[in-house]
Length: 416
Image 1 (cartoon, one colour):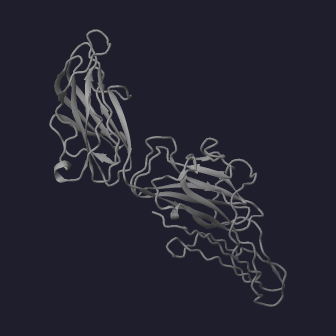
Image 2 (cartoon, rainbow, N blue to C red; image 1 turned 30 degrees about the horizontal axis):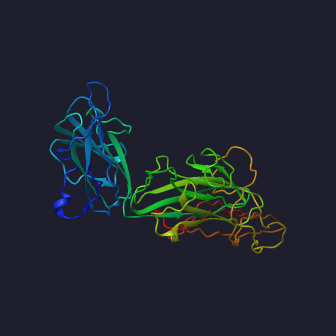
């Protein structure tokens, strides 16, 4: 009886040159099982589990046993590796390629005969790359020795593994200005600072970004990758508007090391809204913190929308009394986005926070002289450089009016 083998992890130059598939080695015969008359029926053993560090080589073997009633005259053995793994070297008799989703494949022809009840042993070797983390290995042959299909059975198996490494998820929020009653887009991001790439190979608890819509705003347009979040998971189709909380994840459930995913929401600002905040969090679709993320300090970030509410008009510059001016509680912004989301605003919920900073847009009128109003909203970009998003001005010698509306956007965390 063949003993269960422990994985061997090696980093020496000799083993980096190890083959992915080598010549089959005969082992002791096993009793034949019932099979279709005159047909081989091949079964392979399971590879031992492993958790290699980047740079290590996995060196194990599987046993191929013929439980049929006829000999298998030559077999095709295939190995496939996800993108964080690779073959140490090319071996004669094997054809190598890269197929969809960056999967590396070796298709090897083993020139051997396996009689009914007999077995052969063949090695499976691979190395962990610097970006290794959530990986899978497919290995085996077809029931009669042909190349395996896409499913898994006794002759074609799959090993999932998690490398001894990590990935650092980073949530990136947004900082912007809007006017009450207006619309404003916000873009939030999920970044993978590595070193490992991310694609869950074992469950449907995929890496995701949780988005809490700021209080006093309504999500009018929602990315299709973002679904409403219920008590403990997604609770509706992606793109559903007017919910308080969303969970967003990539369609292919994959985030490479160094990759940033962006999700843009169009928000309706309520007429009575004040400066408000929401939150984004790096997590999973079921809001479970991933074990591979060892740095939770950058998992959360803020969505902040500054909404000006007060304005003091400037002094009159000529004779006559000023009767106009004052603050505005709403109105449209000349720098805003004119996209019209479907439906009517029904309100939104979310985490509240932040205090309103002073700023305004105002229109004044005068009689009997020349009046003026003066207002300015500083705009700062993510790198500290002033950005002017929109402005409009009109002046006249008598009864002059100045109107200015601006937008400000500051990234609250570094973006790629």
